[in-house]
Image (tube, rainbow, N blue to C red; front, side, top):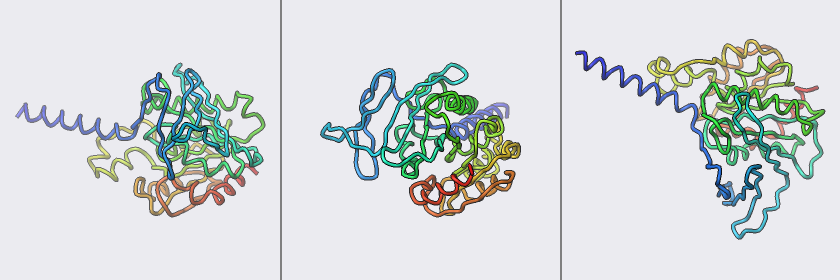
Length: 295
């Protein structure tokens, strides 16, 4: 009997670890990596990386430089615990600025080099976009933990607010999926530093998300160290919740639950299409709603 109890406890512990690890699935890049192949919707391109600065140069398969209609500036900044984090500043070459910077908090998987593509459609509406990798993602140092990504996100806000590259712009947090949950968690802590909050494909909290996948057992096994459903109640600036009824990753009901917990002024923008596909299919509408947030 004693051995059976021990085996059951070990099984529960392992299952709990497996559930909790699903929330952070980073792709780490060795520091000496100088070339990355990246698949896009239409092609596979090469990215040449400069050492130390991680500045990317986008290349065609034949080695010629790819002519983009936007600029990419790589930056390295520190999280509050000393980890070096890699970020990109994106700007359109042809569209006048609307004086709004979107600080993007990306999802739980991959890294900056594939996550940035989700935000590209918004550049043609005049936004400047700042994206970065959490600790342990891409070229960013450190360990990917829920505690660390909170520190990273707050540090990114501080970096933007204290950098001349972002002077005289309104700052909007734009989180997607895990990044949306993260945005709702940090929002009360940085409320005075931002003008608004956009949450796309968000889940209400980790236990709700785990329960959707693993039922009652999932809810029990997943730790809830920071609950977005509670923290969003302490945020009082404009919030836009975007969620697709066709989302097969995060159920619409969880985004709606987070919206219901938020304070006014708030808006729920219900869309169709896939998880985190808002900018691709609804870029104009989303842009107009963001611009209304800062008026």
